Amino acid sequence: MTAVDPSTTAGESGGDTGRDILAVAREQVLERGEGLSQEQVLAVLQLPADRLSEALALAHEVRMRHCGPEVEVEGIVSLKTGGCPEDCHFCSQSGLFESPVRAAWLDKDRLVEAAKQTAKTGATEFCIVAAVRGPDARLMEQVRAGIAAIRAEVDINVACSLGMLTQEQVNELAAMGVHRYNHNLETARSHFPEVVTTHSWEERWETLQMVRAAGMEVCCGGIVGMGESLEQRAEFAVQLAELEPDEVPLNFLIPNPGTPFAHLEVPQGADALMTVAAFRLALPRTVLRFAGGRELTLGDLGAEQGMLGGVNAIIVGNYLTNLGRPAEQDLDMLETLKMPIKALNDTL
Amino acid sequence: MSAVLEPTGQTDGVPPYCAWCGGARADGDHAACERRLATVDPPRHCPVCARRMVVQVDPVGWTARCSRHGESAGANGFG
Image (cartoon, rainbow over all chains, first blue to last red; front, side):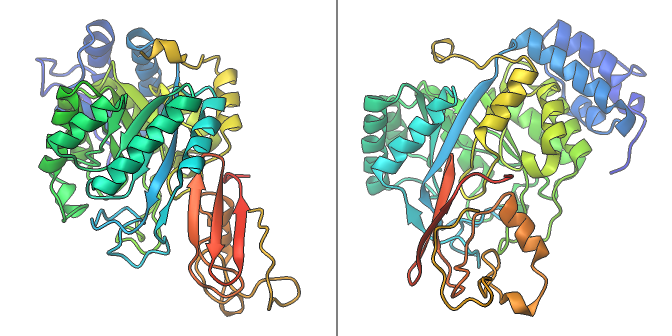
C-alpha cells in the first residue's frame, strides 16, 4: 500500500479540489450526513498512517452524531456446519476444499441454549447461520422449529443467515418473525469473481432486495483482506452504501487451512482501522459491526480504537467455526469506554 | 483448550498428534498450530489418532467428537 497526498484525490468529487479529505468529510458527512463517494473513500484509505488517529476521531464523531452512543451486541451460532456446495475462497465450510471442518448439525436444544447464552450478555440479536447455497425444505423446517423454541424461552431478536433465498423463502422467514437477514456481498463487485465462482455477486444482491422488500432488516457486509486493492475496498464501501443496509458486519480475514486463501496474511491492524474509519464515513447511519477476525487483526487495543473509530456494534463470544474471546472481555471493554449496550426495546 | 478426552497411546502425557493440523507431533514444529489453538481455532483432529473430528462451536464454547476416542470440550479462545 502506498500513501499518497490525499489532496490530489479528494478534489475529484464534489468540487473540493485541493481540500483535505478529512476536512471535506467533516463538512459533508458529519454536518450534512452525506456519505463519502467512492473517490473520497479511496482518499481516506490512502491517507498516511500518521493521520489514522485523526480519521478514527472523525469517524467516531460521525457515529456519535448519527447513530448515538449505544452499542448493539449480537451472538451467532452455526446451525449447519460444513459441507457447503459453494466455493467461497475464504470459507473453511466449503465441501469443495480439503478443509479439516466436518459437517455438523446443531440440535434444537443446543440452539436454544446458545440463544440463552447470547441473551445473558445483554445482546439484542441472535443470528442463526447455515453453510448452504440456500435453504432446502428440511433446513427451513428446522429454522421454523428453532425460532419457535427460542421465542418460547428467550427474549431476543432472531436473525438468520441461510444463503440465497427464493421469494417464497423470503416470505416464510418474514412470517416467522425474523428480524434481520444477513447475506454478505463479501467484497467489491469487481473482486467477487476472485473470491467466489459458484454464484454471482448479483445473485446475492437480488436476495438482499427481496429481504428488504419483505420488511426484514438487511444485514450485509464482508471481509477485509482477501487480496482486494484499496480501490476495490472503496468500491465495496459505496456499493454497500447504495444498498442502504441496516447493518454492515466487518470481518477481517482469518486464513483458514485448506481454503484457497490459506496463504494470505492476516490484515494489518492500522490498515484495518483505516478501513473502519472509511466505511463509517461512507455509511454514516448504518450499524457498523465488528465481526470475525478482529481479535487476530486488531488485538485488545485495536478493538478499543475501532470502537472509538466508528464501530457501534459487536459480535461477542465465538463465531461459526472460529473462536472469539469471552463475551465478558468485550463487555468490560464497553464499560471502560462508557458505551451503553443497546436495549432490546430500542431495536423494535 | 480444556479437553475432557481421555487419550490413550500417548507418550509421556503428550498426545502423539497435533489437534490443529493432525500431523505427528514428533515430526515437526507445531508452535504455530498451538498459537491457533490458543486463539481462534478449536481442535479439528483427534490428538490420539489424528482423525478429523466433528466440531460444534457455540457462543461460549465448543465440543469435538472423535468416532474412536469420544468427546472433548472447551470454552472461548484467547484464554
